[in-house]
Length: 146
Image 1 (cartoon, rainbow, N blue to C red):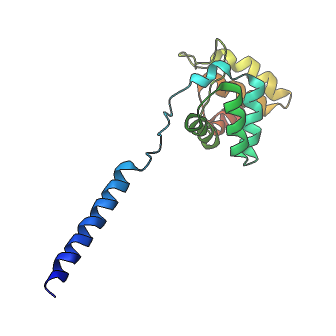
Image 2 (cartoon, rainbow, N blue to C red; image 1 turned 120 degrees about the horizontal axis):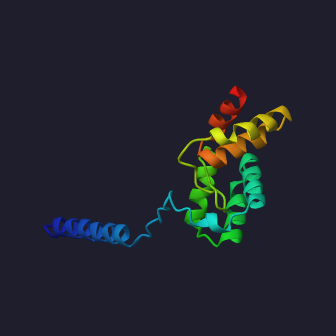
């Protein structure tokens, strides 16, 4: 019976080796770069609107699929971009004015007031958001205060 002690020690060592091997070889999930805006070059306004509608309808998988089809992004980057849209973060579009201007948005005020007068508050908020990097709620509040 003295061999039982060694057998238990060996079983513990084998279990420890198996768990260690599993931990070392398991697939590490790719962490998407939240600041990777490479997809912007291929994202047109129509696609962006469609993606925003899908996200608003809680159809993130369809939005990820559409973004991947239109831009060639990998799954992790597409998911990170859609998650950013779902959180209400600013996602720029393609074009010369895709980056927020450094000087603010005072040059947009006449156009924003005109859109507000026409009752197109969503379009005004989107325009403000595209030019400043505001969140959707911040842009809507700013348009409401005009």
